[in-house]
Amino acid sequence: MKSAYIYVRVSTDEQKRKGYSLPEQEDRLLKHCDHNDIKVKGIYREDFSAKNFNRPEWKKLIAMVKKKSSHEENNILFIKWDRFSRNIQYAYEMIGILRKHNTAVMAIDQPIDLTIPESSVMLAVYLSVPEAENTRRALNTTNGIRRAKQMGRYPNKAPLGFINLTGLDGKKFIAPTQPEAGIIRWVFQQLAKNIYKIAEVRNMAYAKGFRCSSSNFSKLIRNPVYCGLISIKLDSLERQMIKGIHDPLISEALFYEVQDIINTKRKINSKTDELKATFFLKEFLVCPVCARKLTGSFSQGSTKKYPYYHCPRKCKTRINAFKLNDSYKHQLQQFSLSNKVTELFNCIVEDSNTITQKAEYLQVRKIIIRQLEEQEATLSKARKLFVSDILKYDDYSDLKKECKANLDCLKKELDDIVIKLKSIDKQRQSGNYPFVNIFQGYSNFDIADKKSLAILIPPGNLNLQTGDVSLDLNNALSKILSQTDKPFHKNEFYR
Image (spheres, rainbow, N blue to C red):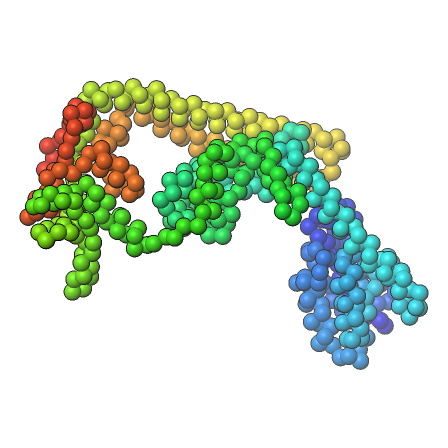
């Protein structure tokens, strides 16, 4: 009695086609073996592409063949030659390897007697046709993607911050998804300031819950999809930008501003950054002894370095930088907006910020509701076509699964928008706005903002004994700001 191994294979796309299922292939091969009195030594089932032989089950089969004695004849059976390979070069190489181990391969629907010299011509035909099909399918896919992009659609997997959706016409499109879309918009805004390294912005985004590897983050900030543009490759050197039909997360101006910044070679000196962060007040401080501007530097102690603002002249005036910076911060935090200014700001925020933000959320809610209706309509239409036997079960099942996933994502986004709208309404009813104590978040300001604030409210007289500093308010600011009576405790900065 002869013996053989059975090998059945489908690729991901072939699973959707009737007649290519693994059970059907296996059933036909088992019947063939039973009819021809062939003993089945093993069955290997594969769900993998045949573009090469780097397939898990095929590797197991080859390992099994190599374990057997070279004197023992082995056979591998499959339905057609395209189940074996879709690359003629790799196919011939594998046939040669199997011959060394006294193993023959055969397709029961396309039998070939390799002992006849002319049969090699038919083998070449059977092996080359699947490769030609693969090449044609890949070319059609490439052309289809190009046509979709030329129409402004993004046919690939949605990038971070977007989600793939399907319209009533069956065409796919991408739409922003929260909270990723909001964080990506914030990322571009931070990069446009040109004061942070890319890695620093990524770490700050990570702290907000944005998960993205370093390499993908580098690609993300260079992707024109976020400003509403879709890139089409014309040749090896030239690309064309097409206006997409999807809603952009940022403006084109902001995108290209960021590209100019991140593509410019800059020498980043971490020591200089540390000096700027520690001695950001040095341009505004005057020596109380000789009236010259103070500078800043670190002094080496017995165990570590200590920062000091000091006079470059012979008077040797110096003040601990940490104490002086803390004193400046405390003096700022003693100020809040006066009552009349607060009332004015309430009106301004009500008119410009809150109402505008609520309008944006309402617009987003309207878009999400429309998308939900489209998905539900698509599902309803597909259900009717399935009941009418127009749509096959596999196609209906795949479409239903996709619609369900889209509906779940859209419902989650809708819930987030509803929560934000309720928060705005609650804030408007309470009338409590965080801008009254406008300097409470001073510690979170970046260096550029702290310097801008120091220009507006410069430090005044210095106390060399305590390290305290006063503030110089001009007449206009003295009418806008009012000072609280909260006592200052130096130790609160070191707790």
